[in-house]
Image (cartoon, rainbow, N blue to C red; front, side, top):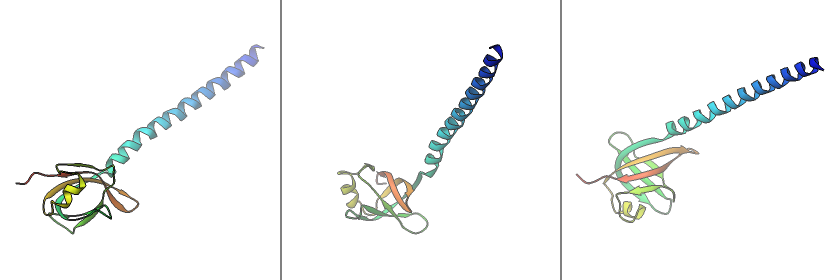
Length: 118
């Protein structure tokens, strides 16, 4: 009997060690994922060239480089513009600060801030 208990304890100890190792790896991966998501968020500042409310898209021209097409959704937070996105349509030429992430090959805004006029 005592030999049987010793064998059972060894298997139980090995199982516990294996479970702890798996949970540690899972925890480490869970910690890495938010960092990867944060790295994907990009910020651009530029002038509003066009707002297409039907396509839910903005054309933003940064200080350097070509204009960028950025999509927005109902979840996009818009600040500084009266009436939300509708207010951006009336702000052509104004500077905005846009945070976006690439989703399926498109830039999708999480926030759009209409900056104060200088």
